[in-house]
Length: 370
Image 1 (cartoon, helix red, strand yellow):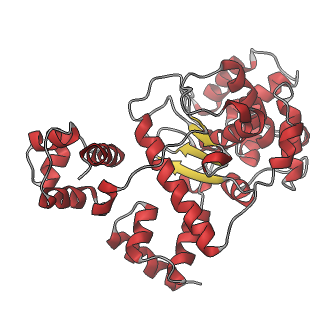
Image 2: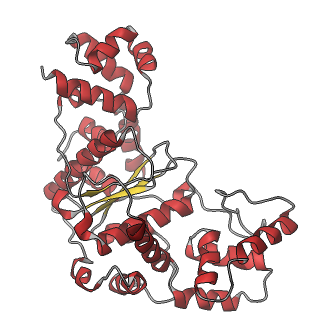
């Protein structure tokens, strides 16, 4: 029994399931010292204890003994130190391995459609790079992106959502050398859907502009590269021609409603709209104060820093919900593999990170509709 591998996997899976050591001990019917000793590699547990821990975490027992491939071509940086960074990387590594297996056994590999455009995407011109990528992906100059996950997946970019309780981490990306290109987006409940969409586009910006800066050992953010990726994402989601068209057509609306309308059309934050007004020269920095004052007058309440307004009223679309950011290609491949008997039901559950009972229910749900 490889105690080092075992303890690392138990610790990683416990963190992933958001169990404290005490909570895991109680759920598994074990003592707290027993869990601590296992994670510190101080004692080799009995198989019955490992089975109890696996049941408590709702994971297959073999997950405790599976080695995790080390990733190297990764851009995972944060302005704050993260304690569970290694756990995230291990989970992403397993997901990429599963993704590659499914693509190969189903013969569903997709090439990266933007690979050839990299040579024409320059750090100094992120706005032009965004326009070039939009054109390559078949988007018109005024066209909103209605499904960022679907667009990226069709372009050969793997997309994964992870809920991580951290407002200092929004996403990471993986290069082709490790099974990418892939983007991983934090969908923690406190992070708005607009921010999740922006994070996906931001990571695409890194893939296109900073391909030479992918190294798992680099953990500190480069402010210059972050600004470049932000500019790419802003213009990828909100192209100038489309923004100008919608802004001019909504000229008769109340200022706040006008911002909301453009925000909803392009699925960006209201801050992205205000930023574009400043960037285009249509307004100066005082627009932020003026918008907050106008919002207060209109709704009799202030808009908090991290809040996204819900819309223009009952007749208008409500604010964006979690369903507006859903990747689905991986789960679709799992379904195909199950239906073609390439994998077992328990393996499908393992890939989707759910329990076997939940997998059985999901499979029955799939069978209801073609």
